[in-house]
Image (cartoon, rainbow, N blue to C red; front, top):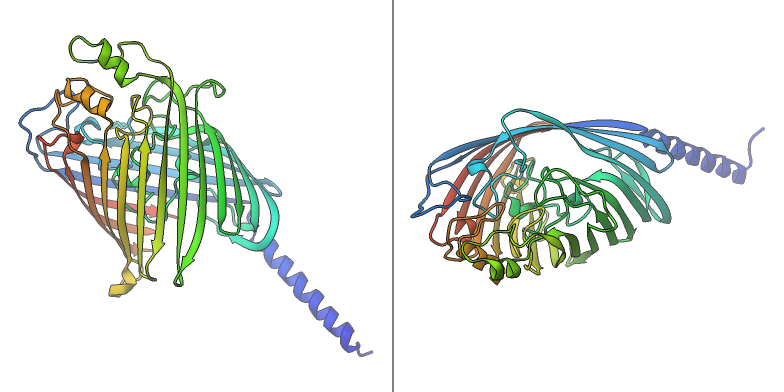
Amino acid sequence: MIASEPRRHALVALSLCSSALVAQAQEQEDWNAHAQLTYVGQRKPALGSPYAGPNSLRREAESSYSLTATAALGLRLGGSTEFYLNPEVAQGKPISGLLGLAGFSNGELAKTSGSNPKLYRARLFLRHTVDLGGESVNLESTANQLAGHTTSHRLVLTAGAVSVLDIFDTNNLAHDPRMQFMNWSFMTHAAYDYPADSRGYTYGVAAEYIADGWALRAGRFSVPLQPNQLQLDSQLLRRYGDQVELSRDYRVADQTGTVRLLVYRMKAAMADYADTLAAATGAPSLDTPARQTRTKSGAGVNIEHHVSAQVALFLRAFQADGKTETYAFTEADRSFSTGAQWDGLAWGRPNDTMGLGLAVSGLSTTHREFLRRGGATFFLGDGTLRYRGEQDLEWYYRSELSKGLFLTGDVQRVRNPGYNADRGPALFYALRLHWEQ
């Protein structure tokens, strides 16, 4: 018996719907495994230095290297709840013992870097997504993301051990030292003293509300028990780092971009520069008077904009209160960075990328006076200081050798290293080999 026309249309529609559901089910991953390996070799020629202190960038020529290997393992626990684990191995030899700069030249070198490989847990977290409607959004299989589907309106909850920069102050042009700019000043706002242990990780909770180009994010994370140390403080109700970010995707003249506004507040046992200077009879010390529970805060803007299909620009600007010592990131109380990225398609190399960036960082009045009077902070201490803002200029060229394998050449010039106009400039030359799958 021949089916009627309406019935035939209904059967066809049902068949198409069933096929789509099957395809969607096939595209959703129940687990995945990704990995990365990054090696950086770097060289610093000798620099001009009429004097040096205990925490100076060394005047003689130096070489450095870093090696990191990370596994990213994901498992779907059911529905929209996912579990992720990142074991990581790192080793390296930092230039000048990772001292004497605000914008350190290799973002792969942590404060605990050493020549012996160290295996540790980088990330261990749960993510739960609540779909709230809107258009369907496909998620690709990448490190710490299972392939699947969600909606343009959604709530994303994250809890566990992560990097704060996994969620806040992201930027597609200047964020990842394994693939983009290597200097710390381009990973995030240099003046954003985001909560992290000395490897760059912490634990806490975050919520993200995403709705058709808008996103509101908020999170609370653990701070170190002591400045720039590995052990984290478990008292999240007493000492913590809070951050809130509002972002908006936009389109201007057929080109896209994103604006992100970030505010943060940290509460921890910190030294105050003004109190330290008032109590000092000689060279000031951050241990006198004793550290007390204090707060620090700051705010910044982060913009990325695509000028054309091959050229994109970025800009960051941040202002912190500058009253207390650096606690978890680097020595800066205000920072500005800008730059551009070019797609190699413009010169017939579609898988290549070139970037050029400039970052300028500064210190508060009491912070610079502490250093001028001979004080030493965790990263800085030339014995005295003729203050100027530190300027970090970086150029890189990344070429894809084969699928997932990249070679990058990188050159950096740092003017006024450690905010000292009497020293430098410092030059850094690097080769980076990165593999991912």
